[in-house]
Image (cartoon, rainbow, N blue to C red; front, side):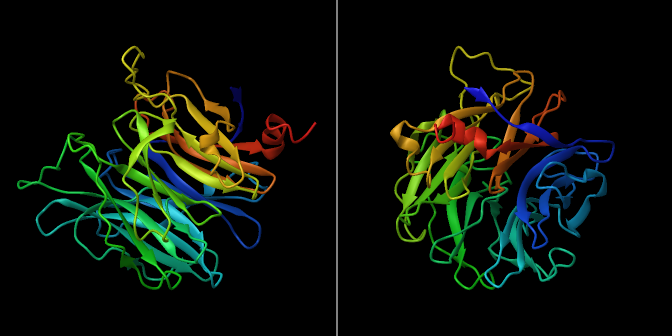
Length: 373
């Protein structure tokens, strides 16, 4: 496999800022690129630590980002934290932002929901956020997960983790996840539950389905992929705009440890899947420093991604240092290039530490597919 990508930004940690990552990109109307990400602002890098959403900007098509002048675009207020942002250009031209908000439930547990806010001035100010879920519970939401379907519907994949009596998760430490979907048919002004609660088909698997993502093919079929503890992503499909789904099954393409994947269309010519491809098989040396989340690869298929399963996709390496781990990726389509951002453990002993952004000229992909001499 060919290694691709050169570093354009590295958002490091510092005292009072122990973790940076889980982001999404969006191009502004003036041509600048905004990268929004979770920035932990206390002494804890734990998932429930204090965090806000910050943004940095590139004025040179992703060659550099002004990380010294980041700005807060969503504060936690009285919540436990806010994290895991998804950005979207709305049908009326507004800039839309979804993010996860954690709070204390009536029963004293940690709850999580999805908030949505919009900006009429390209992120200078934001509307009062609305709750997309409006149900108490731990609805896990990850970065860069919300998509707009061909029909115009906005679809949000979530993973509900339930509590037992006494406040313990139903499952191991990570909790047993069940996939569900919320949607909007009016460009984000109201949201509704599609009334799906999809469980791992093998009941004995305590982790369940986690950190689900989605992508739509040109045919209209939607591909759903979920992190599991079973050595691969689990796949499910919908042909009715997310109202019903096939039974999740282990992927024959996307083998991975318990680590999330991201898929995005690029320039109308390719579809990129970024993930950790090697599960923790019995004879693999497991390194605690990386959590098994290395290497990080980019599998690229021509067209809308429906050809991932025909054996013609090309694999590229983004990161392969076994001393570090890489996870929670996101891809940005720049037209004749793409950007990828992801957590980089930065020799810290934890995957969830710093954020790295790399740039890949699309001509390198063209060459690999034999489309350019």
